[in-house]
Length: 289
Image (cartoon, rainbow, N blue to C red; front, side, top):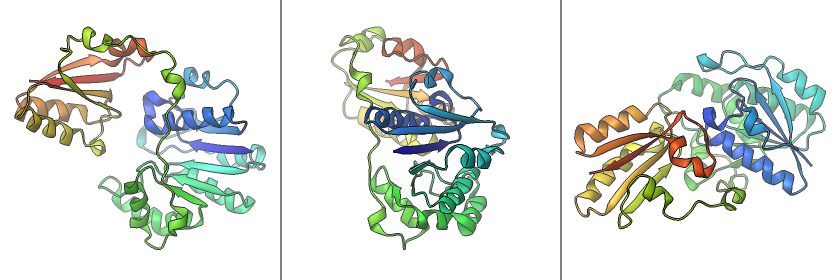
């Protein structure tokens, strides 16, 4: 079975969790004897990550206007017709993109079933609000209604689809939690290495966040909650680990301005070399009294 995974980017360093999830799914599908195909733009493409999927087919297209927030691949339709007419299933990642619109029409034309995993991109929020509503009015709701399944990673994700169209069938709204790549745990670091490297007392309870430092992740609520916890006990330590996706400076200022906490910013690579990560662009923040 051939399964197409189209997404704008193939780079965990640049695009975060969606690229990471696509990487893990493709790896697992190949192990199960399936034939995953990853279709991606060339902007910020991570060749090192690709080399970790040596047996997976890749289709890489020129992508334009990425810095403006619009990743357009003019060669997509030709590539779909030339190389992907025999695909069995399409697994769309995210939702409102130029690529997904073309892929939607391609699937309808070729009668190929498709599923959508929006990865939290369904809600309107405030960014590009009118553009998102226009998209849904013109094509978005049709894409949702004609999908074989709309994958929600939590109950919240499921409700986000229903907020766009309450008439969506519950039978097509499965909840599938993101998978773990168990290969990452075959070689574990020595116990206590992280604490010793950063002089964290072994009696402290470490609370950690691992993910993009983005407003939608609620890091500010975590920091505020941690500050309240410190009023009741002093044996806790908070660690935020992840790439700065526009919210790190706010978190730093929140810590310094109103919570009377100290904040140490460290390159993620120096923290996690034993875990075989190497992105110097990722930062971590250690918060304590």
